[in-house]
Length: 90
Image (tube, one colour):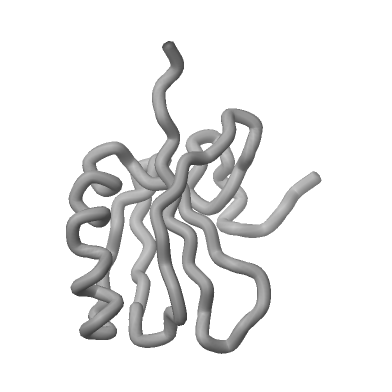
């Protein structure tokens, strides 16, 4: 069985497309329990991404957030092997 790929999906108050981050296993477990508190308080968190980097998220600018599972072929911020700093290189 393949490993589950965890994603943090953020919808910003300014609108537009959602931001999607691939999370490490440890960060996904930790963040899923704390996500309601971060959303309610507008706190800042720096989750560890699947590629070992971190991202600073100010939940004061997030309208809604949820955890999800990424399909195997999807590449988003923090996907291992996708070191393009968020910009497409294809």
